[in-house]
Length: 411
Image (cartoon, rainbow, N blue to C red; front, side):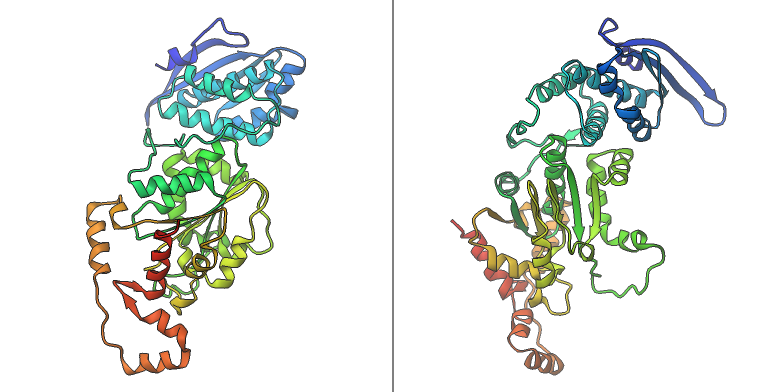
């Protein structure tokens, strides 16, 4: 398998399989090491393939963990067999682009490496990958990428990611058609997962250049106190769900490389002030735990060519005053704004373990318990806001129920 893939089409320009050997590590078993030589032409095409100061080779080396070097009229790649196969496919694409005099920017090469890695591990043949790349590079320089046809070019565990319910289909369609989308629904309905999948699709299709994942650092009812480590270590527990979704769709080295090169950025909401994000997909997760001021600050970060997706569950607000939720406020203020899409996901859209749907249903049917005198005193001090926060209807605040009803009945 490895020999066939590496040695495919031996007569193709600039490509030549040289040798394969196996080295034995007695402590760990057999490890296949592969060395290939890819011929490159002299002159301008060589510069386009290798990149300025061999930039492209450096990115291949860092991303795939292979040894790669340019020697006269060839590039020699050595390393693990799977990584060498991916490197070979990347070099073939770079050579094809060079023949058409199509210069690739740094971000284009990074996307190419990620795409080839995903395709190889998903079982996509080199021929299919070649045809897709040829179609992409045949566009004129500066031409707008082909429109999104509704299908996601994203895989998890070798299987394509698709909407599994009618409401999820509406969700992806809303992301396709609007620059700002709100997805509101209970746990397990795929709000965050589909948002990340759509963002990865747009990133691979070169429709955006960056992916920004944002989450408020709000604890779910517990006070954890001071956390050890630097800033990244402190916020990592809050951002872990976003990493989990991302790593389902990309292998770890690709995710790590994208984060190191700021193609993918995972940040707490508090660090967003003052930024302008151009040509990016910006996802705000757990938006029910933002305040009104934070939501306004976040929504105004959008720059040219950007899409923003806001997800949240209005029944799981962890703020001291639930009526101050920025998600509820934004849904009420922006519900009639052109270019803003709203999707209400329901219990029937739960796609986690079947028990999750039953749990959501049970909590949704919970009735109001009698309020203590201290709660009544607190409500009288806080005025109308306390009423909106404390009066429940079918397991959610009346404010939330009203917003959800308006979303469902929008024309």
